[in-house]
Length: 183
Length: 183
DNA sequence: CGCTCGCTTGATCTCGGTCAATGCGTGTGG
DNA sequence: CCACACGCATTGACCGAGATCAAGCGAGCG
Image (tube, each protein chain N blue to C red):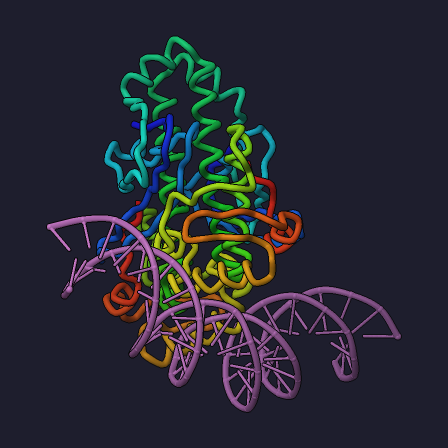
């Protein structure tokens, strides 16, 4: 049914019938993904590890049995699904209303924030995904992603070498991505 | 917790802290919305009726009690939530990868399809929402929405007067919106 | 009657997509 | 060990879809 990530990173994406991929999210340690399969017990989404990754499979039928005896578990899972919905809707806002710079600033801040919660450095990290994945996720081309990274670097917001990123000016970045707080 | 729509139509949207609105969906008779509130028992989303609308409120605590005694109900609701996630991810694809014409074609077809399921005419209907709402939902400006409607009409795909729409060439429209089948 | 609101249409501008070239690290085979 | 290819990232030049600005129009309403 779903999977909890121990270490590493995952990209989730779905392919439409015309063959194009849409990255729907990046998942990092401590996060859970794979809700969509519940709808019809057939995943429309696929997931690939972006680096060496350890996951914990949670089969749906096991979960059903468990939650019958533990109602609190059921509520917890519904909350996690609802959080997924909120995340998606945040992404929808990002794609519908925000510029390339705003989208990438938001992504960087989201990653920073999520790493911070896991007690990892929120200002120095390695992006697990490629520029192409970022572009796909944010509805941009590789070239635009690359240009924005360069521009951010020129402005002194970040320092980055390929996937290695250091956030230098967090306030300015979050100023760019005036989005609601991460769920 | 959530609401089932008897008649009329609803637009759901959320406002970010900078005050901008993002329409996250249109809901029609027989559909259910309001999942997001489960995450923290506080809705980030708001809903307004677009026309005279009758809804049925489903409070979360009632639901919890019910589903404890009826496990099948719980599964059913999780499936509905998962469908919501799938819908959102379809919208994400639409916003990230598709042109203005493709987005609007998809919306028209989605409405057509959903009306058809309720045994209403899938080719002649009245759009319950304004051009501005459509634009907000699809990440477009009012002007672009209006222009695309005009272009579709010029191409003989649809006939429309303000909110009254008739689909003349369904194959061509679905050709435009080469998207995966609605969940 | 005059006002506002929603919709349409036109003119212009701009952000980001497209096309193309280059660099760079890595793996592979001679 | 070197040559080459391949994937990924960067950068530049150009172009176009859609945003922005502006004007006009019909319908509803005080």
